[in-house]
Image 1: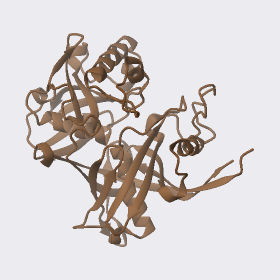
Image 2 (image 1 turned 60 degrees about the horizontal axis):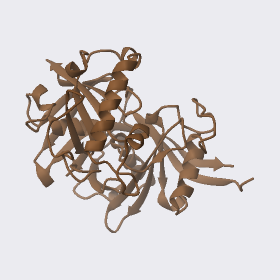
Image 3 (image 1 turned 135 degrees about the vertical axis):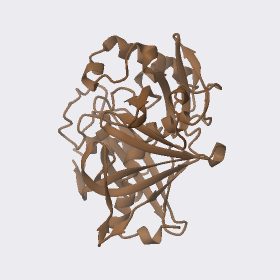
Length: 362
């Protein structure tokens, strides 16, 4: 039996995602050893032969991809930058992805820094600089102190008010593939369906609901029961991933099997016409699950596409520099400005620290 270990961590919620934030110094150096620790913390299967526990009883995971997320952070007070590395776990397998970032969970990092009492040592012009190693991109966050605490706001999908975090993603294009439009086109046709393959914060395939024979206003439960539709969408996703030349962590091109089994790449947005209250509607697939609301990365990606003529999304969008995106939990606002290396996408989340302490590993 292994010697018991204690891992100091913060158990947090950022946006509509939850997981842990752990200081790099409190983890092993080797990647596979870190993976072992994370599987224990979340109660994910430790090996392929292990029967998955949908409740993740042995850890803090809640059986959904949105609650199986971890950030490793490293703080450089001299350079005034926080380095973040994101890990996405899966409740049904030992798979852990180090390939993408999570915008929702990123919003929890400023609260951790505030609790540590070091925000004032890091801020420049009122912002906290977070450098994400997964995507090699920069995120800038702001929190607001008020009456001895932090200013709060509401968020679709979260019932109560919690500390407000403004987020800005600088130069989000090509976060994974190195190109905003990795196929070389703003619109492609896959299986007779027009799609936009875009990589802004993360790779995503945008499909209009009409092309799939649905309205786009179907409920989550109804969609989950439409097996034929989901199979068709997944087929398009896999072919799009091949066209985007997505790569494995070792640099090799992903095969159809790799993409089919991926828990992170590429995501899918099914969009439809907005109304007087919103500019566009979105159903977001993570890709193996139908998201209960919206991912920050997915919202940023769609906002970028809305502002670029020739994409599937631009045909449904008429406002300027701000997109009101309707999803299952409500309406979220994403703004964008500039182009090329000056492109910036911004939004607002709220976050909370559930607790901090040691996780015991036996």
